[in-house]
Length: 317
Image (cartoon, rainbow, N blue to C red):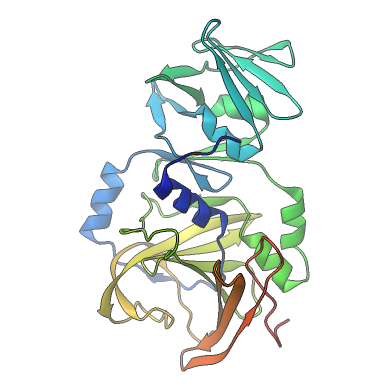
């Protein structure tokens, strides 16, 4: 797999790969600031490949949406090559080998010719592949969100879906982290305003007690995102950037500062008990906090299974 060298992007990728929390949604409308409205009109198109944000810009040309070919590494352990003499691009997925030529609809898969609906192109020396062609060539699912200007490229992992449907709440919540994610904000997403470095960055996941089908993600104590799960996908319903001034956001009692920007429909946690999970890479353990409107009920720390974040909370089924 090719490894990008952009530190800020690597940090963002790490956070995207780790994600999850859960809470029941209410219907209190969010306030939309002028900053958010402006962002929605000036935001550049982007892509998410198996929930990882693309490193390079998305290009829209003559109504066709293109993403950088090397972004496909997040569909699997792919390797890429370019023959400067023949001007051919090669992609090896482990089980199949593809050969493509810029500006040509003809593609070879394991030596056999196939026809793409649109050809790949070169933009500033970088090979770009049309969204539809990715689905045709690699069997991935693709979607374009016009309002958010986001492309989604993903593969459905049957094992993750099975784990999400498990009766084991810990297993199901962990699987919720890896379900395909789509925005339903109706505008561009908010972003972390001042990303912290790899050592100081943090991510917290919050679930309603006993639930798995909705979650909050709190990143760097700056950006809060709320997802609900439907049809084996996580739908982004609300976001907020929080500031430093003490205050509240609706009835979201786990937030102690005022919002400086919001997007989407703000959820409600009225009458709920929540459980937060925060993994420490330094200690290699997950701390949990059971809380309600009155404050913390119980806390603890547990070493999760290798490569996982969510842990079993005593007394919760």
